[in-house]
Length: 228
Image 1 (tube, rainbow, N blue to C red):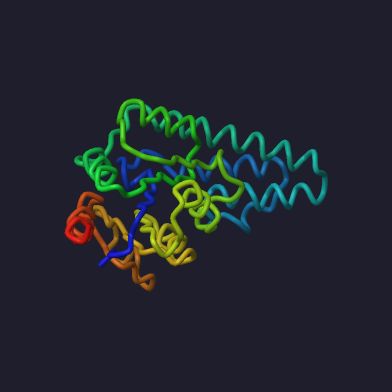
Image 2 (cartoon, rainbow, N blue to C red; image 1 turned 120 degrees about the vertical axis):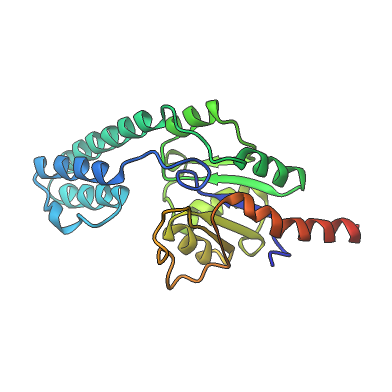
């Protein structure tokens, strides 16, 4: 498995670091802002936060571009404030830093792909250093995962095509995004997560920690060394 992998792309929250963001609370805050701006927020209540902001911004902008911009700015400020607060004190999962370092030592490209803001991610990485060649937050791209453009932007920097990449994350959208670029996919099902979280998506591998990926990639690395 993963014989052709030359780069590994990782989600951040819940994959490399312990979950720290209360997304239900964040969603309620954003929906409250949307209601104050007169949006029909009940139509998007089940969507992820960034998609809610995009939908409401479009709705309000159709009426008045200034109103859409006002909502978008207020909503993003609220989300960023919550992300920065959540970043305080968060820790990486055991063995993650060593695992990413080993991938780099094997010559594999390592990218962190996250919908979080850059300021919060950098705050976490300052306390939890991890090897990576590329970091792309939502502030760095026009479209975030599960849009394939988020992943392809990282692979462009690494010089690796999608079919030679591995996408690893703890959310179904990570698997979906990986599929969209023809990458191998690894789903992280942390202890306590619903066992049916990835039902119907058929990731190539399900692990409880990203450290388990090393067992699968080490075989490929040793084979490559023997051929060289």
